Length: 58
Image (cartoon, helix red, strand yellow):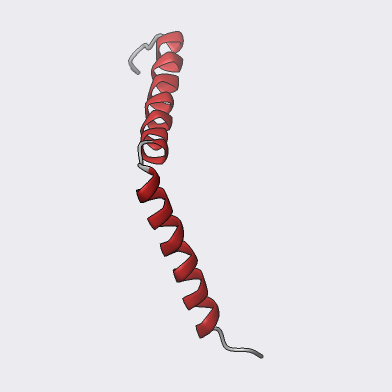
């Protein structure tokens, strides 16, 4: 026989886990200094340019 669970507790636990994951993502995004954000943006732009340069035209 299956174990009986409290659906309200299960729902709250699921929501709490999702909130923790969102908080971790926010800490990564907003926890950077301005210099780190600028460096990351510059690196993304450099990678994008490099990718565009290596594309072959049809």
